[in-house]
Image 1: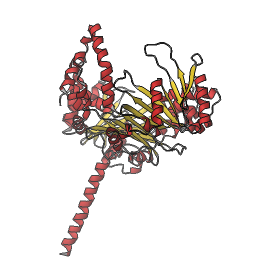
Image 2: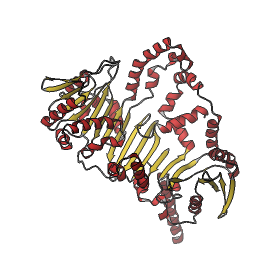
Image 3: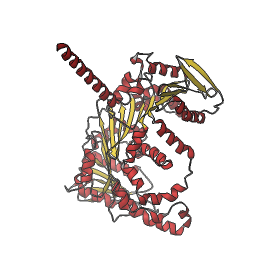
Image 4: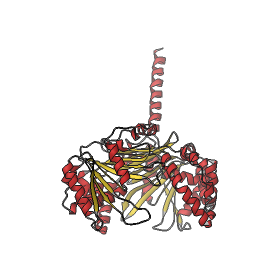
Length: 563
């Protein structure tokens, strides 16, 4: 009896261990691949399960919109002009037949400006059946497939195709297929896959930068990217020197330990997670979203982000679209004697931007805002800015109800604009027309229901973690409805005056806006600092990080093959 009880206990412990192992494997979909790659791998792209991702794509809001009869009817003519490439349809069918899993491509190292690449995937079926498909891919990749040889290695036959330096070594290992442009790297992968190299400390899964990045990634994903910029530091220095940029000007890039991003489908939406491993900015300011009160029920875009005051002088080096405008503002005021300390003392370094589009307006109204700390210094900066930004166009200054307004009349053009800056003791608001700026100033002095009280906004914000550094909200349904109302008459008129347009698209078959809108939900992005780096999470029918690329690829596949 005691022996039976002991056996039951052992069996129970073993079962718990197996279940834990399976659950652990589910939570770490990258584990199989990273155990094959060397520590210090520079870049990795991982596609865990093609068929599963395809099925999830078919349940997404974006795909349901694409499948709407009215949308299909409209797209029929323009898509009919797209060349039908049999190779794309064949590739999609081949991937499905192989039941591709754990597909990966990695840059394991760079030597003499030549990257060492490695890739592979697991497949279903026999090696001979797989070779019927893989052989075709191999011949398309290599320029001269007639040049080939084979090398025996540990009961494996490695095929080397192509002439140097355009050579690819490939090998089968059970249900795995591996390829590399470096024979030594391919052999190392085989050693890890077959268990001859049992030193886990030499693999990517134990790399500190990689492990630090992966702890911020979701338990499952459709696609993952990983990059270790520090491994490229020497290459970046060479590139900077060639461009004439001194090394100290790119200090932010040098601080980045890793970049990792994953995208997945979540209840019909696409969800991205982007991690940038780097030290936190020295600023202790927290995101307050003080500009949220300026939003209305007609706001389709809201953005709030913290500016790093210590990096105002290099604000455009991040490559962001808004960076160029902010850089010009800072440069102009700097030449006029305004220092970084003046900016920090005058304003809270939280930039807010909003775009409203009322139904009776032809175009949206866009404003940007900063909270005022020191009205005297803020007034000094605005006066310097309006005098220095364009010396040929004078600014007109007036005052209403204790608020200073600065107007600049733009030259005559198709769309006349009146850049306006309003400055009160509490807030600075800038926009491209005086009406929207004055309206925003009026809202800043009142407490009224607006964007923050909308159900769509509240629901979208609950879908992401609370932001501490930046937030972006886009009401795609509102934006599309306004674009449709503004552009549909113009398109119909264009088709009447230019009949050749009908050869490419039937404007009269534009789907009704209500058909499109019912599949659109807000896009929201939230950024926070989490221990060792910045984490940005984004969700919506498409997302603001990498989520747009995944549906584009899947749509292209669906276009060429009806699943």
